[in-house]
Length: 483
Image (cartoon, rainbow, N blue to C red; front, side, top):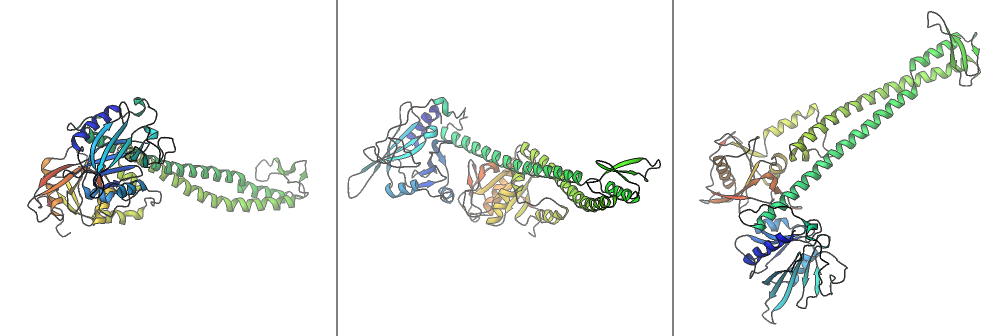
């Protein structure tokens, strides 16, 4: 993070977090932590001590969402849970001119005096880390192992040498609703989504290009095999001529001189003799070459035709993948898994089953937009991560289990408000909030929805969202009421 954003975030942290209690810590990845601030508005302190994108800011999340996302439990998070018991944030300070933020904590104890702790968020690129210090500034534990003096457990904490602020630029981040934290959260979520898309695109391209390379090499080798075996009919002709000229053939240094009876002018030609003494011996050798070349040609040409057909199919697939990358069709790319069978005529049954939409209820909004509603937890996952496209609108009841709802964008840039409300009503109706007079529904573009590692079916995490308050009911028209 840039110094300018760290300073702005610190100001927000002092307004929102100073005096709050750190109730729980969630490990959201190898180096990412979220601290519950004990507030009712869903604000959490988020810190990433990894060297790739070290950062610190406030995030808005549902506690249930973080509980489901915190599948990986690291030793640092366990250590914090063991030693920190609802400490109060009494001071937040950015070290002067440094990309380091210090949180001083006070932990009350009914038996002994209050205990002091400090959390150090060191956002310094390759040396980024998060440290827990005791009341004498001694390091008791760190997120990442660091053997540098002054940053080892048991050492008095010492910041790393200052690195130029230009070495860690976030670029220009547009501030949303006056909140730097919200803006950075969205900025980094989009960066991670872009990185995920780029990795997916590169791996999909690499797989198909490797397959094309292997098939191209095979075609070259098969053609070389054909050349090596030679022309079967030529070998048969040589054998016939050697037998026909067995009594008159003249043995030369490199071959037999024979009369070519297959030519109307009957010229004399030379046929290599393989260092054999008689025309009959050479004829036998040529007949064997003829049989071998004839049999090999049939098999090689069969393999060559099949390989060239595969090459044609792979090149067509490569063109589709390149078009999908250009159109940012993430769902199409995810469908191109390494073990996925090639599309064949027999796949019509699969397409028919897909069209049956057994995983979702189908509706049409008053504005003509298609709305899909997942039926079960595993259907929710299928709808969100196999069917929905990046720019489709995704909805779900805010605080209750329920169906995932997707508004298909169908190439349109903006979803009408009436359609959005009708889809939100469906999300509320097909949730445990159905019996309530009003229910909150989160909505966002599908590209901001991701699946935490190890999460149960239907559970997702939102990088950014807005909320509607609607009545749980069905206003949109259902396509097939029998489903």
